[in-house]
Image (cartoon, rainbow, N blue to C red; front, side):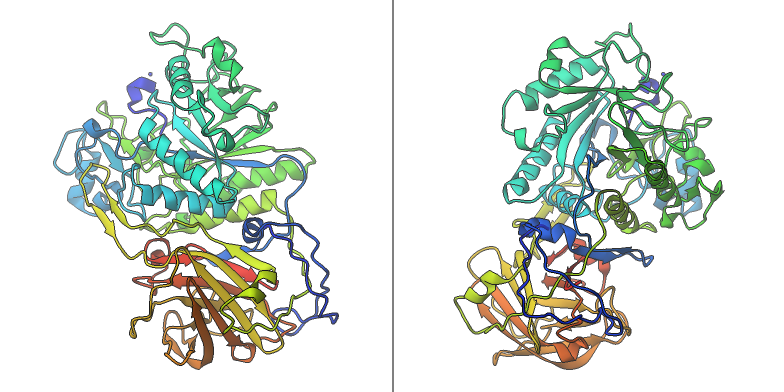
Length: 618
C-alpha cells in the first residue's frame, strides 16, 4: 500500500553436552563420520529454538540449522500493512481478482472501467485469497499467527505502512500489544517502526502522540541507534519522496520529533534523488541501490515497471517470476525468481567486501488495491502473480515465499551449523516429579497463547466470518534427549492439565518425526507417534506409506503428568542409533485436517508452526 488513490499519488540455552560420548559419531545417514565438539554456547531456550528450527517448502528448498549470528549489524525488516478491513467506505464487498479472472464474465468485470456487481470502481479488491481468509486486521488470531511466523523467520522489525496519512491506531495497538506479550515471554519478536509519507509532519506528530509519548512500548521499538526509528520527510528530503513542498498539508516533519526519534528520509522509487539517509521501501532499478548512511537496501517480492506503473498492466518486470539475472520470465512464478534475484543483490554486494546493514522487504500482507476510477487499473497489486505478499495464500504461491524469505534471512544473518556432542540421559518416564528433564539441554519453546479460539470479522466487517474452536492443548515446551536405546520427548502445554484422551481421536498429542534416512515421507517426517494410545501406557509408532498414509511400525511408551506428556521411543524403530541421531521433531494437537499442510497454520496447535520442525542432534 502506498496510495489509497492514484490521484493522491499525482537458540539459545546453554547446550553443554555431557561428556559421555567420546567416539566419532556417524552422520545422520549412518554412512559417514563427523567431528563433534562440546557446545559452550550460552543460549536461552528461545535462542536455541531459533537456531534449530528447520523446514522444507513445497519446492524442496530446505531451511537448515545455524550455529549463531554473523558479526556486525544485520537487520531485516518487512513492510507490514495495517489496513485490511479498515476502509469500510471503500470496501463493501469481497472482490478477489484472481478468482474473477478465472471466468469470462469475471475478467470482463475486472477489466472494465465501469462499475458492476462483480467489480466496483473505487473499491478495494484482493489480489488473491490469503490462507487466513479475507481477514480483518482487528482479528487477534491473525495478528498472533503473523507474529509467530515472523519470529520464527528471524525478522528484526515490522515497518508499519502509514504512508497515506492514516495511522490505524486500533490495529497498530493490537499489533504492538501482541509483540509486547511475546517479548515478555522471552521471545526475540520483531521490533516495530512507522513509515510516513503523505502529510508527513502531521502524521508523524499523531504517531508520536498515540504511541511514543508513554514508555509502554519502549522495549519493542526498532531503535538500532538508541532512539526509535521513524521514516518521514524532512526539509532535506530534496524530492526523494513523491511528495512536494507547497502542498496544502504540512510537508515536512516538525522539529520536536527529532527529540524522540531517529529520523530517516522517505524514499520513493520515482524519487528525483536517491537520498543517502533514506530507508527505501522499494526500487525500480536492478541491482538495487545502497543508501549509505543506514547501509540500507530494499528487497521486494515484485515491483512496478517504471514505464507502466500499475501492476494490472502485467509487465514481465512486475511478475514474481521475473529473473533479473537472466532477464527472463519464469512461468512458474510461485518459485519466486524476482525475490531471489533481489536477495542476490545483497549477497553479491557483500561478496565484494561491502556491507549491507539493513534490508527492508516488501512485503508481508498488503493483499489489496483499489480499482482506480480514472482507468489506471490496479496500481500496487493485481492477482497472485502480480502481487508482492510473503504471507501464505490459498493459491499457487502457498507458503513458498515464507520459506524462501526465511532461508535468505538465515543466509544473511546466521553462521553455518556445527556438530555438537550428544547428551545422553536415562529417563524414567514414570517419574511424576519430572526432575530428570531439568538437565536436558535440547529445549525448544513455543508461544504460550497462540492456540486461540477464533471468531473474527472479515474485511468488509461481517461478524463471525471466521470461527474456529479447535484450540485444545496450547503447546509451550518440547525437550528431547536420548540414550543407547531410546529417544525421549517431553511436551508441555499451558494450564494445569492436558485434556484427557477420549479413546478415539487420531489427533491427540501426536509427534511427527523425521530422520535423514530414505523412504516415503509426509513432508519432512517418516513417522507419526501416538495416533492410537492405550490405557496401558503403550502407544503407536506408524511409518508413512507415502504422504499422510500410515502403517504400523512398532510401539512406544507414554505417560501424562498433569500438563506434561512424555514419550519413550525405541531408536531401532526409527532406524537411528545413539551415535547417529539427527531428527526433525514436531508436536501437534487437535489438527482438524492433518493430511493438509495448510492446516498446520490454522487449527489446533503445533510446535513449531506450519512445515517447520525442531532439529535435534545435528
